[in-house]
Amino acid sequence: MIQSSQTVFSPLPKLVVARPMLMFTGFLGAGKTTLLRELLKQLKARHHLADVILNDRENAEIDKETLVGHAADIEALTGSCVCCDGYHSFVKLILKASESAHDVLLIELNGTADPVPLQESFTLLESKFCLRPRWQVCVIDARHFGKRGYFNDLEELQLETASHYYISWDNTLTDSELKILEDEIKEINSDATRATAASLADALSQTIKNSPRHALAVQQPNSSGQELAKPILATSVKGKNNERHKLAHAFTGCQIIIPEPVEAFSVVDWLRALPTSVIRAKALLILESDPDKRYLYERVGSFISPDPISGINNSEAPCSGIFIGADIDPLEILRISQEILHPDCLFPE
Image (cartoon, rainbow, N blue to C red; front, side, top):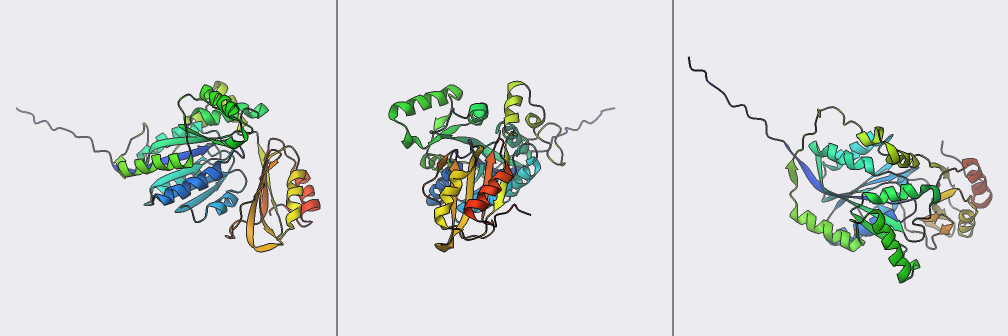
């Protein structure tokens, strides 16, 4: 008796949306949002639309206000560690971006984030959303790089996985000092390329033009239709990387609501009076002298940005201050705010 045999064919992988992705990393106040804002302008000039995911520790809506009008879509994600507590919300925002018809996904991590586990996350997502190429630009603050004390390891961690780096405040260095800084960067990551907003826009534009909009899904081992598990690196990091990842959890933050408007001359005095434990502060304010606009003031370490960003009129984020540091005292910050800026300053309800 002749037995018939049948050839069993494995199903073809499904097609999923493919899109280039650029992730911004860098320490608190290094200038990530400034670079992101300039890159969005450069992409718009090249007729490309970007989706943006903006992560911040206390209130991502404040930085979101400064990007309105520059990106096709902006999603704000407040949370200290997107690879731990905020992981599933982060994944949902990425998958939401896969439903848009825009050209590129830009992700800005908060200044205390460890990017390493997220690199694994993007691989796990390839069965649903193919992010290729996956580039990372680390923003290096020329004034403070390598001078973070206890947090130097975290700053290096944010650079180690980068494909590109951008040096902010490079005009504060001499040519010889800049050469020393670049040598230090290359010791940590010899493969990263120095970039500008224009060069990043050129590279992304070329990739957008040459890359297909869909790709074959990469099926992950033990994957199913269930919710995506956290990356292994986020839950079982070992050795030195585990100790460095813990640094991302060493920061605390608080938000203070600031009644509007306030007197312009008191803002700089207020920022200057904040405790040294505040590594990063930013405040969205309305001034008595110009009540039709809102201004974003910033302080990094003891440095106060001389020119606030103006013209922020969207009202989604309340007028408030955000303060981040390793050991801050919210009650002390509230006291200083009430004494110098406005007596009715208060914590959010």
